[in-house]
Image 1 (cartoon, rainbow, N blue to C red):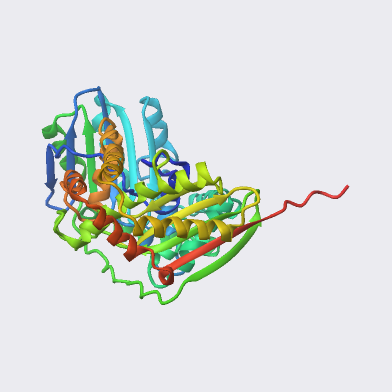
Image 2: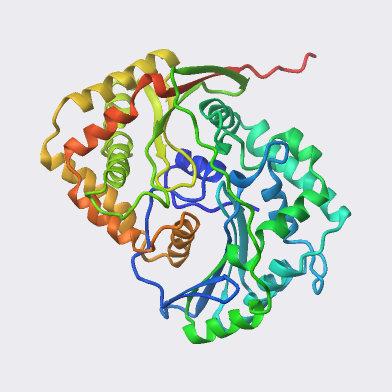
Length: 462
């Protein structure tokens, strides 16, 4: 199954697909019509939208690769695949066949922090998709033959996304080197050797531990009546019992005390540079989403900084190094903003022909220092803030993006009001805030640099 994204830039799209469910793109503004927790702990969110006769269901399990243990990386993703096999009442693949017969769409994703399953159908089929999803959330059947097939599918997926993908391999290496204790150092799809050694019992144990009602949220959005939705959720989930969840032990990343540099080579056409800095992030313990909150203010200012440097139209690095000096073919920026794990800020840059990776890295450092030294006109800062705000506003017409955003807040135990409050904080951000977070982030002793050098593809000898 593939993950979805809200990013327009293809490099940031890659970051999203490989590493994180969530982004600094916010869309949701309207409160849910219903936000209810059943007696067994299952949470139900309903967003009524009668603009089109469709309904979206997203079922979010608050468990992802960040909850895995060493030696069993990838088990969350493998189980996601198993969820499309069979249940006590459905034959192999029947779930997808039914959704297809209804003219609907479906998909699933595994991220560091959650596993999500979603369908979109005509509103007349609301009960059908709730019944189907509740069934596999409670009655999945584990067969060795199914498990072996899906292991091979996942291995092939890893081959395409990582092993044979220079950028995928580079990001995997970057995160493994940048983080030592935090589980975000492991790839979501899992290390190849771990996948090969997973057993059916590992997937079954994961299902029994995490796929319990008090760790699940069902989000329904579209042309529905809230009272009907609640009755259907209670009908199909109400008989399940609350369970004790495993204790999530903190695995805090120790302070970094020196720059880490990696050289990586693989068959490819282009050289490129990845540079990651540790960065602030909002968590469930960060407090209210208000400007006066130092932690929140830094993260929102970091979002403005990302736009200031890397926006495709107005970004300083793009203007200076891609358009004017033409030292780079492309430069992209990505960052985390809400997470159960540590935060990061990443620059992804490809030098032009004749320009070394080291030269481009030096040019990027120079331009960043200039930004942090000079005071930009207030007019320019307002343009940057409007660009950052526009990314949020343009998403509001997408029902699916609203559902995605709700899932992001849920998994991080944040208020759904964070979206509109984020925009309020954004309005108050000053250039001093942007410079302050820039000086905090861009500490070379707390950076990890990956220099990618392509290997020439070997030609078959005649």
